[in-house]
Length: 313
Length: 225
Image 1 (cartoon, one colour):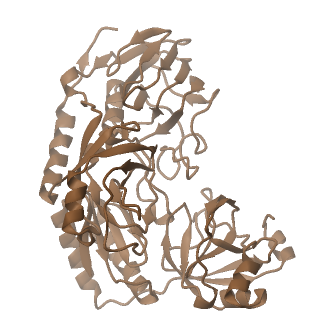
Image 2 (cartoon, rainbow over the protein chains, first blue to last red):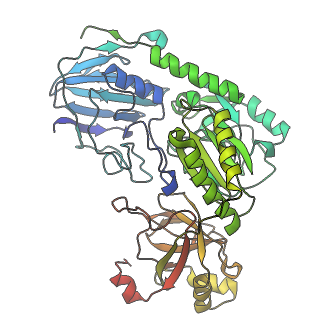
Image 3 (cartoon, chains in turn yellow, green):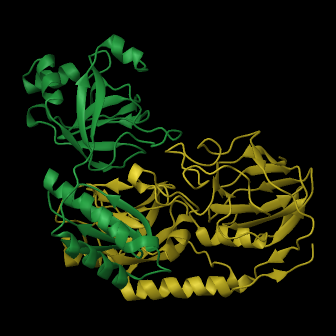
């Protein structure tokens, strides 16, 4: 099958779909896009369902050549898109032809971009998903990040029209993010004062921020207990290790662990967090279970209702 | 039994406070009951030493309904009997050649290498949890006489099949990875094979009995030095 070939993989480019579910019992994590709204839009802009296999490009530098006539779209962070050297807008689809060169420049403030192609990249799923988890060697192309000369199979189209997502509907990325947190897990082992310190503190993103988790730096939080019996870790769980500096665990997290956790970040906010680069500012805000539920459902129905507008090629 | 919030789409059920075969039995029974009670609303499940993490589909049920169903399922369970996990035998080549920490561990414990091996072989272990890496099974409890803390400096690379001890836990490394456990031998049996069915020889709740083999048997069984 024809498709695309990678000329330069950039810093870290990974094939992702909606993620791998139902495999925690053998120790496999979920994987999937760090910014799932952005990947969903990239897919919808090329007439795909939200979870079809696309490329998550972190930090920038991805360059590929198309061997087919099709539609592509880039969404997410601020890696500038160009096709055959001409600057192109993100958050809309573009027609490409065989021989066209698609290139992403480097991110300045928001590091995750998503490249989708009509029909998706055609790779075989591993344990029900194409999501690449490099640490596990599972998914994508042999469980690894994309490399020069890799071939990404895809089917072409010449019929479907170009679409765009209007500005007000795009995620408003900011370098100061408030992450809403549902207190849970061992929260009762964090004294009130420590909880107040956590929810009023200003944290910054450290260099140790990746697909497993974002390690932050700020006011240290103390816990009554040092460790716990290793237990299941859900998406967004906020682990407080012995040094008191929080780690927000993300898509490639280990499935079990023994550090106390103060609660978990809402899925609405982990995408905006994972867009941040070292030095950016993070605050935490507690929400009730009912608020967490409402926020999820409101966002879900809004995302379903939002429509895309046709644009000229 | 206690149910706590874990995340917006996750509850964690605590079935005890320590690692014991009894608590592990309850974890296994609870995991099966919760799986049946949540049906299609269940997204994923992580049974561990004394807890079950339950992840559900928020578009199908909310935390109130999930909690209610888990409670109902576990109340009905109190009278139920527990299943005994399968017994899995794993061959191990115990030798300083493949167990670089064997001699140091014996020295610290005031035992001979043979005694350490005999004690490691003398326990039928239970699979308390699977995690850390695909197929990594936490086995317990290791006899206190040979329990050894993690190395102060973890190794950059531990080979596949390495049999190791950390505190009162033992494990077989399913794939090459960095690791800080004490290496005492090597197992030729693959603990995780994505192409095989089942992908793992053990499940949480199963029992494991190690069996000593010599160098030649290790090689014949496909072991790599």
